[in-house]
Length: 336
Image 1 (cartoon, rainbow, N blue to C red):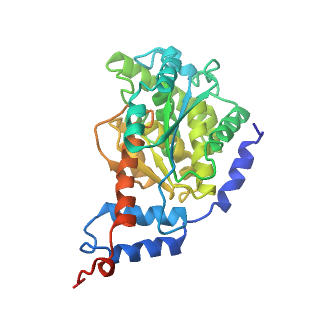
Image 2 (tube, rainbow, N blue to C red; image 1 turned 45 degrees about the horizontal axis):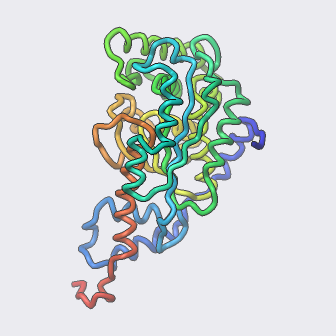
């Protein structure tokens, strides 16, 4: 794996490409000629134009969607912040690999390729209440690993994560990035409540107090409070932007990882959709902070890319209508 540094990652941000305005305009013009009242497909029309602009072509293509799920372990899990032990991360990875998880069934439903990336499961991050979760070098290495998931030829990238303790890491990272009280960002995750949730909030508070502060930028915070899988998602989002590959983000932890880039450059997530609104309380607050709206609200908080893959089904519908519908001229229908 090529070596890099966080400074090199920072240097990529000013040169991030923009959407292709001509392709987006062509898609909007086609929408006006399709056999339907103007605007009658609502969000589907907006999705088709957004997709065309970021693919840089119209008609668009959605033949090769990839779902990338990154899995990592967190040292902070030893503090009892999850309803499950850290061993479950590796067990769930095996479940993904054998086809038994929810995301496997959803990928089959929408005909998407699933890739699962293990992130040094035998070497969890450090407990961020006593030390930085990762060194800057480890964080950069994880970002590069995530960037490698963006292979040439994929049409859209859906991102998800698996990692016992990562909702604690995500809450701490979101709080450090965007401010507020740790209790506002910290939710049940795998299902903790009562004293266990209070312990989780206290853990988030201790991490933010230890690692936040002036002079610490978003990538430093990712290293100090994040996880291998979260850093990989940050890297994947960055690489997708460099390659003009549209991205669909999953829930709270995944969106926090992407939001690291927003904190550095507010337009850095313009190529991203948020697939669904998680029931984790911090997710809605986070979407407000980064100026995004979720495509779906399904009452979910599973992770593993499940909400992103469901949203891919909606995007498939938008693309099918955009490409497959006849124009008024083609159908011999008076436009009025």
